[in-house]
Image (cartoon, rainbow, N blue to C red; front, top):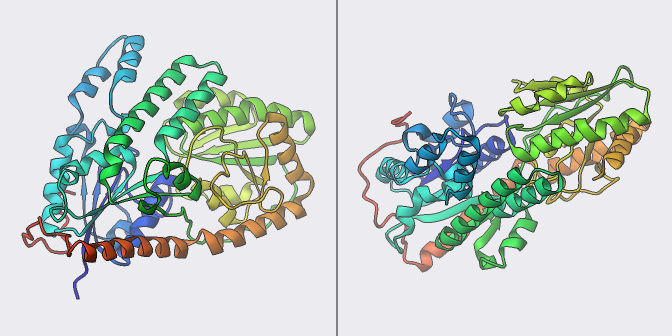
Length: 444
């Protein structure tokens, strides 16, 4: 029996590992594949394209990867060519679209929809606001001339940008603050223009849904929680050698870069004052971390870059830390640390959106001294830290494993199926089936 087709559009290759966005894309791909024949279109503006892995080959009937350099907005290309850095930054701030929408042009939309149209998708699931323009030609049509559409925001990009701008202001970086504020304004404008056209809006946390409900009818918002697959439980690390802190993130992402600087520049000196024990900080993750190279001037800090397997780093760590001071959504990397059974110290913002209890699952602190004291508490009382880690691992297994996301996706599309009946089976009515079959890998 044939299954309905769904077009899934992502800004990077979905994966079961890697950075948090890739992991969310991968988890949702698996959930969608339980009910649909998934046709995956990737415009890799949030990560290198790279080869597709086993997850995509298993869960997508075919895939298309578009080179973003071939669909770049000419205006953005002109801005990038400005030689003077100050003039280029000013022009970038005046750019009317979100930065990562620079390749989501009309040409890219035409290529995605032309590739998808023969499959007659009954639903379209777009990941992230900045890729929403890729289905704008379909959004202009009223039912029954288009499939049902879901936009997975993951987080409120405009709110996250405003928080980042406030952080830059507070830390004396007015140029960065102006850029972040301009980006937030562009995201707000795109959201105001396109969100009302989608049938459903998805976010990763209930708090994001509450925030968006002021602008979007609550009935149209769904929570698709972030999840992690089970990880091998690690033995408790012996209290020998240096006190080892692990921070995993994409360091080309401004909130993670700021968190690394906060950790190494402010928390580390405070932690030195608390202990005579040697300290080691491992910064592990993908992205352009070139501007963090100066952090390695501290003998305690090692910048590792991306690694194929995080297991050995978690096994060696006394604790995982998440010292974030900006951003939005929920942090998959925090869930991953819990799944490995490693004690966690985080800021309140880093844990926002997750049902966690300070002292029960992790330790929370927001100031350099407070964060350092929390790290030192993990070192002083390893048995208590291990019990917190056990409770956090149990919470993740029950509430943030694959099953809750699969259930949420099923309910989301069940609601859409019900709406289909009310609209007299509107899906696919405007799309001609031109006979493209499963397994077609055109456009790879």
